[in-house]
Amino acid sequence: MDKNNLLRKSTDLFLSNPRSLSGNSKGVNLLRKSTDKFDENDLGLQRSNKGVKIRVSIGSLASLGLRDIKIDAMPTTLYLMAGEKCIYGCAYCPQSTTSTVSSYEKLSRVVWPSVEWKTLRNAIFKKPQFIKRICFQVVNSENYFEDLMYFVRDLINVEAVPGERTTLPISVSIRPKDIKEIEALFDAGVERVGIPMDTASEPIFTKVRGGNFKQYLKLILSSANEFQGRITTHVIVGLGETDYEIFNAMKLFYAHHITVGLFAFTPIRGTVFERNKPPTLERYRRIQLMRYIFTQGKASSFNFEFDKLGSLVSLSTNISRSGTEALLRTPLIYTTSGCPDCNRPYYNETPAGPMYNYPFVPDKTQNILDAFVESMVDGKIIFRH
Image 1 (tube, helix red, strand yellow):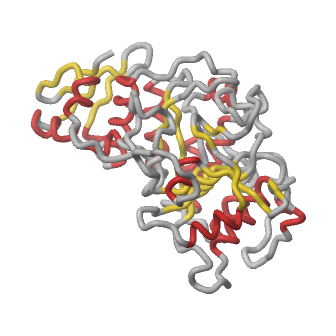
Image 2 (cartoon, rainbow, N blue to C red):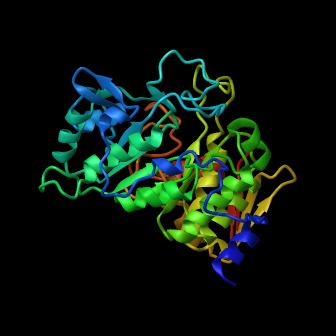
């Protein structure tokens, strides 16, 4: 079966033109060859009397020595925000059109101060060795794509002398209009592109995120087939979906070699969902374990057992008890997931906890295991609820 037929079977739909899925061609003329130059005066970039500005996570600024704050887990990726005040209405995002926040300096619970681009760029070129990657979090504001391409090309700039361009791999997390935007990013030198699904449930996607679930899923899978091994997606646990829906989404994503990054829903003041509760830690650990089994290619060795409400209640396997215990004690299950070297310190939590995603490898995992596993017998793991 060829890729196109496999893709149609996976999503159970057929689109006559999978390369333009948004139905909006407005962004096509904005795409330029990687050698083209942008005049920054033509862009919708933040400005001061000193030039272009960009928002950067407070932890990233600390890691570069541009902010003096106490932090117990330095980010291993630099997180930059391209754009602000999104055109979409996601019910859980402070950048959303539905948000009533007075300032657009937050994404999730992280503060993103605005800094001079040239100052930041020079600091990136002198970055500490523990920084391994740059990640652009794209807010779909007016001119978001041209602004993003300006920043990316200015960092990669193949014509610059060594020391005035970055050699760090660059990831971009974006809600793209069509696959042409993905192509343009890879053409510009981006290493990985994240296309966040956010919710694994079609009715919830339509209700809290907006848009056409099937078309958006088609875009993710089409991109994964064209750029194999270079696409990431994000799943937020706690938007109202079931464990079973997440399981089916992961099964589909990993069949197409798409990396899944997990997030815990975080209520933010000023958003529609500000009063909603985050997922229980027990539930989040079950989903982390599920994801890890998929990443290791071992899903076929387990029988995932769900109750009538779609909650994962147990796992059956032919692995011995000792082998099962060794699996559950694997520290990487409980650390931040996504692109390589992404640790997103305290994106979903405060340092006081509860700790959904460890930004470092935890020394001991027995207490983590005990908090969500009720019992183990040969061939079966029963989870707490």
